[in-house]
Length: 84
Image (cartoon, rainbow, N blue to C red; front, side, top):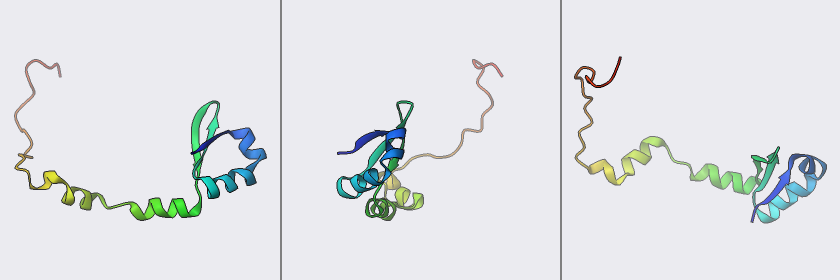
């Protein structure tokens, strides 16, 4: 489970933050109470990067790829009920 560190504590205990990321997974750093960054082990980072796929592959593999969807743009003029 990710531990949450305030930025000042993370600065003071950077080595511990890194060790925790390596042993126990991502560590969340907050700034003024807002989750701001995550410290990941290199192995976790690499796994995330290798799992990425191209947007074109995503669309090609989508169940909607074979659906009969009309993607033509409506070229009619502005609707009368909308002010320009």
